[in-house]
Length: 424
Image 1 (cartoon, one colour):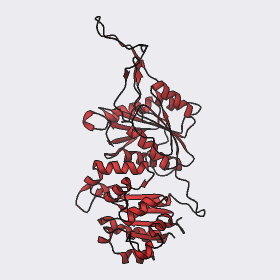
Image 2 (cartoon, helix red, strand yellow; image 1 turned 90 degrees about the vertical axis):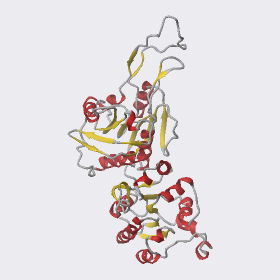
Image 3 (cartoon, helix red, strand yellow; image 1 turned 135 degrees about the horizontal axis):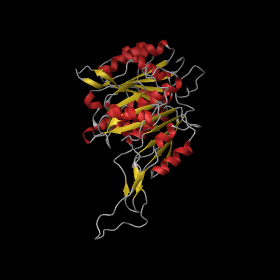
Image 4 (cartoon, helix red, strand yellow; image 1 turned 135 degrees about the vertical axis):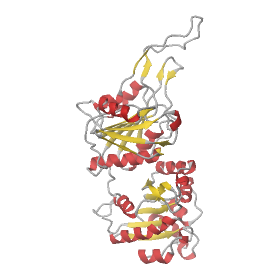
């Protein structure tokens, strides 16, 4: 499947660099042409001779090599590959990429390229979960950079948690998803040709011209999901309530304010293959919003008559004519998480529910991390706490597996059951 594919392997500094040698061997076995670029830090863990012996090519190390740079070698390197793979992608390399720095050969090549880039991060768990690294990872996803891993497990430093580099076989699988056997054309990505509807953010339900009912949803999870789906090739329509987030790349964004407007925009987006309702839609609205600003009076506090908003998720789950093949909802709860999620799975007639704890102590609502329990009929699966970007990437892969008929961790995901509103 990788016959004659040109891969530039950038080896960063870290104990996981030794896996780059195994990855190189496996790529060559599959017919790929591999060139190595070894950072100064990477050379502290593996030798240029080792990498050169496995690639059969000269290993590039120095930005200011007189022989290479006489012909603008960093530009040639950046554009002479079908895919650039960074193994391991260290916190330092990710920071340089996110900031657009170019102080060494690796960062210069990565800045100068228009070739697809795949990162396999590896670092200490505290480095991976540090706010700076999370910001950098989120920015790189927005820039269209693909990730494989990191995984959770024991690390060389003796700690356990997310930050362990993906194994070479997992990286190979991610690389193979970029290519196919028909000539040199890029493979249609796993969700190419699939249309996906995503909702995000809160809704604002007017009380009068200046006041409204709302919630604390930031929209971060829904926006990350839209970006992850688009990165896998989906045609994504993101319907969002009022948020202060930039539109994800390659996503059609529809901005709305109220639940009624969001429902109308969702109806207009149909038919779609999948609908992911991550918006925290307000449950109630004013039955009769005032035409003028409500004033304080001597008669006391005015009575506010509330009525239910439209249930977008339930409406999508119960459509007869053009129901999406896969309807996914979020259950944002503060107690009895899985119990409420299962109730919503049934009452909304969805396929999957992603239940998340949004109690104040969790820090999920408005924060950058989430902790998910994926609920389907008869089973559930708890995901470890991770960034919302990582949650989005994992969910996008699950959606791709669903439509490809792949193994989805034994979850019986073809049922027609449902969930509720609300991701943070």
